[in-house]
Amino acid sequence: MKTEERINSWLQGEYDEDTKNEIRRMIRENDPELQESFYRELDFGTGGLRGIMGIGPNRMNKYTIGAATQGLANYLKLSFPDSSISVAIAYDCRNNSSFFALVSANVLSGNGIKVYLFDDLRPTPELSFAVRHLKCQAGIVITASHNPKEYNGYKVYWNDGGQLVPPHDKNVIDAVRAIKQVTDVVFEPNKELITYIGKEIDDIYLNKIAQNVLSPDAIKTNSDLPIVFTPLHGTGVSLVPKALEKIGFKNIIHVEEQDINDGNFPTVKSPNPEEKQALDMAIARAEQKNAALIMATDPDADRVGVAVRNKKGEIVLLNGNQTASILAYYTILRLKETGKMPSNPMMVKTIVTTDLLNTIAKADNIKLYEVLTGFKYIAEIIRLKEGEEKFIGGGEESYGYLGADFVRDKDAVMACCMIAEAAAWAATQNKTLLCLLDDIYAKYGFYAEDLLSITKKGMDGQAEIANMMKDFRENPPAEIDGSAVYMIKDYLHGKSIDLKNNTTTEINLPKSDVLQFFTTDECKITVRPSGTEPKIKFYFSIRLQGNDESAGKSAKEKLDRLLAVFNSK
Image 1 (cartoon, rainbow, N blue to C red):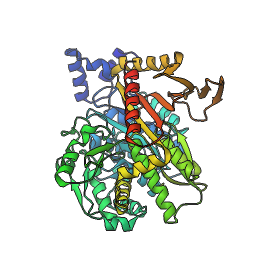
Image 2: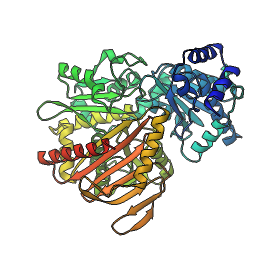
Image 3: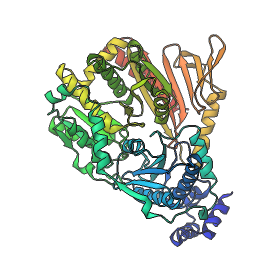
Image 4: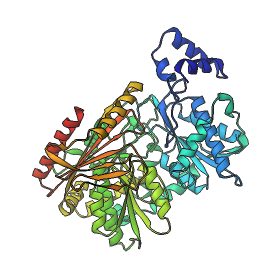
């Protein structure tokens, strides 16, 4: 269907008058947003929907949410024909999130499906927990994670508490695409099938997190450890301070301006804890209070950024790979020391996450699985290995971590508790988290990583990203920064090419538009389009021997050169 046909279908279809009047205004004023809003349908991808809010099929609104939910309802009925179906729904602080959650609840209930709807905003990981705890067949969370304020999203979970994976992801996509007109959607609710949930689920979830503590004595000794926390206007404020207090921390310092739930995110350019500016106010508060630990969660509280003090007393940010390495090292160490290491432990990480985790796990004979980018694949491994191997931790470089399997998505509430606990334990050894990181580098080698994200907006940007990936496949680099490329992994075609031996082996993972280049100087470069943002991403990872200042300096110089090379592409 062409753009003009889509516009006419909305003007002539059973859409509300406010929507039609807005379309007429855009036509009258020749608004460029009209083309962007109607040139395609917002694709229901393997993770659900994510897009800019507004009218039209390429925007997040009542009708695109309604169609997605109707498709999900239809698929649930096919998948569980002899069962009483229920779905849990949560939402974050973004503009329209509570409205979109109610639209979803109305459509599901209108289709005869029982709904457990959170009574207020809640972290995404609590939704994952609630799906399993309430024995639901699916879950929905309304969030666009760390995207700018113009965005919102719709993520779907299956009955294991993880996001959709094959075959359900493709099947739900097909069911959603089968909704051809607005009259296919049942918007009228059956209110008797909607049950509101809240504190009772919070309490059970927080109790499970508290049971995961490995060093209660260290927390008791350092219960006054000053911890600055900011939710960046999001859902973290509802549970992170409570969780920290529950496990024994008494000195939680708030950034009051950012405790206010606001989908416009007025105090930050972007509510993304990967970006230093997002932590500026928290760092300023830490300087005022002489705090040594700062944590910031994104709007739906599934990711956490961390800042700590170095030996000079300066506050520095940890990247996602460093935090994941500290948590893995600490967890393994304390499980062994307390005699709580399970008989068949395993960890999981994504292919773009630091290989330092591989080295740490291998040193203690712990099996580590590598999966595609996306925490849903980590959840899938947990499900597939359940009863055979015990998950003890995992994560991804984009600031997402999980320390126990009662949640099946990255969990910043749990991670904040783990990070604070590790800091408290380190303090009993007269160390800081950075000291632990130095210990890790001294034992396993110095690893350094960086990320380059290039934004390409709109339909032209989408085409440009596709062409960049095509060019990398057809014209791969023979060398990078003076080092020969000896191996290429192409996850879209499922093959690993050894250029030295001229051999090809199969990659036993789902197909994904990802390329990796490995060089002779232990450098790995990964290229992939973002699945949630209009970006192409370049991940750089290098390994050097030693952990002294010269290694750090060499690593920074190398990473700077790599960033410059690929930024010019």
